[in-house]
Length: 286
Image (cartoon, rainbow, N blue to C red; front, side, top):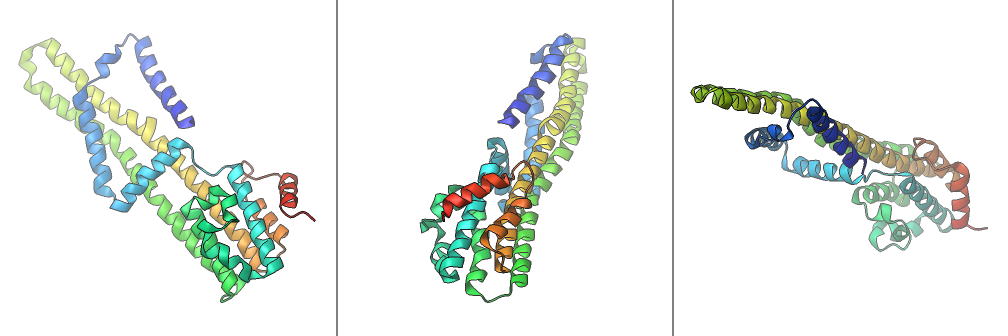
């Protein structure tokens, strides 16, 4: 929602300021310039992106516009789910977790927390971390290293769309110059048509430069930064899982393992300790 608000502000500020200075908005509407700039930008995106990265760029943009980054409720659900998992493992033995971890889509436990169950990447990372704990085939310190390696791979993969969008954003001012030069060439070819026609074509050429800079600094670059924040939020979600599972594997009590994970979170998404403890007590009444 905030992205939509920001977009409206950018448009109103640009067009409104232009009109206050006596400009006519329709003067800026040159379809040929839009075709050149947006077409070349799209071509740059396609040339630079492997197919899977191109698909991920679309998903990241959709997620940013929809505001799907993990919030305080998502982290609260995660901590409650981890606590329930650890309590089952502590009371009934780690083997009791197998039915939940091996088929989480059918698990009654995971179904209580749709923000994790319906997110493929979160669910996969959580289950991948729990499987070695259940199997008991590796030491706790080795488990942490294993999960860290997977986390690093996910963070690297998440940055690919960011790099591509940065390339497009950095290219747009230059693409605007290309559009302007094409407009000037067109102007020189029509110079005999008189001052009015020449002035119109020069205005169209200058619009190309404007649009390149406008799209780069008004939309693409801010959108790229927003995706970086979303990536950081998702990375923090994975780190929270890592902290809790690694702590539990090392012998921490379920409540302590969850508390360690809670304290690793940023303040804007971190549930209050008292609120979380009260919620956990309801899950585990004495």
